Length: 240
Length: 333
Ligand SMILES: [Fe+2]
Ligand SMILES: [Fe+2]
Image 1 (tube, rainbow over the protein chains, first blue to last red):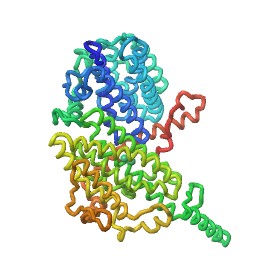
Image 2 (cartoon, helix red, strand yellow; image 1 turned 180 degrees about the horizontal axis):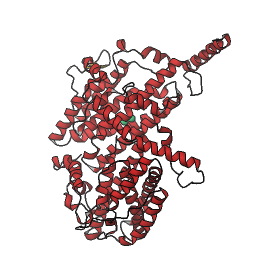
Image 3 (cartoon, chains in turn cyan, blue; image 1 turned 120 degrees about the vertical axis):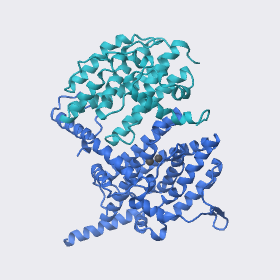
Image 4 (cartoon, helix red, strand yellow; image 1 turned 30 degrees about the vertical axis):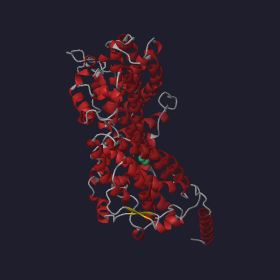
């Protein structure tokens, strides 16, 4: 049973968040700072890919959605498409996003609707993702001088992509703006415990045409999906 | 050495020999000859290194996997290989060496990994060929190791072999889809098999009359079958599978030998094997460079984890941060 209209759009937008972040985490394979993190980052990537596939399946064919849409048709938040950077950047992105996703899925799980069963399952996965990010934020923030500097820089650098998370997602039965306050409370508690400070700059760029939820992405995203889609598109109609 | 110590060693050697020849298991606390320990460290380290270097050629395709299902399978596979590395470094650590030390030796080029990973993955079909042939050859090599005389290694191999056989089936299935897909997909699959077949046969090591470590390893029940026996077994397994895949194996001399009840196959180009072993394969430098770079780029992360753990074991009251540490501290430095 496919969703249609705005409910389908909402499933695709959340699916895009999950797919794009999964893809970015997959880029770490073979490059992680230790074997335990090869395993952990792949775990998170696989959870997210599973979520994406389920969400896409509610709206249509998963591979058509992933491989045959162009850049402007993707509805993921820009935060998840940001390049991995160093390990601190990846952790900051994880902290911001998993904290948001946990709140969002908790709300979705209790709301009426087709996404509730997925949200109920995914919220457990996301709690683990968040715990992973929290533990690393604490270790890096309160580790060495270098790790603290890097973690602070990463938090500051990605801060301006966080505001968009609380924009409305069309068709989603959740008041995303209302998630901002609990999100800020939980993220700032972690940051404080990590002996770091929450960035005080704007949480979105000064000029914005709406961002990822409206299909406006960052330049890095075009390259990312070019790589992701190339082989599939090179063999139209083939099955794999 | 005093007479008493000498007698001890003689008794210990006799006990060790008795356990090994009765197919018993040697455990980490048991006495073992120095040469046995050294052989195991060398072999387990090489095996562990192969698992983690082996992540690279396949990770090369994670971002380009042509369907989400294949992307998930491939990511899980590469993750399994990291897990195999963890089990095996763990097994090596029972012999009083640590992972950091072994990684340093790998990075310095003083310990080896399987030469097969010095070949490039040029197309998506290579992911299938690696699963089918490379994981397949690894299983043929490793199943006998599940009965290795050294307990921790044998137990690690039991877990690993289960997962390797998944990988082998997934690779076969991937190639099957390509072989029965469009003409371009079929050609891609055939090309991959053409390139990976001979290197896979080389995975069993040099021919028996040139293999340097075999005899003693057999006596110690570390090794059970000769290189050539295992290679032959692998060829016999692959031939019917290639037929059902609809793919040709690139060897004009390959044919069933009724008399021997096994397949004859062509001469392996051992000069290529020696070249790759000496570091002159297509990707030797690239693989080792990536490994070193990942390790060096990760140094500050490992140092931070160690520093954090040290601070907070001193401040035991702070339990909020002692939660799910995964042992990184032990790895730093
Ligand atoms: Fe493996
Ligand atoms: Fe494998």
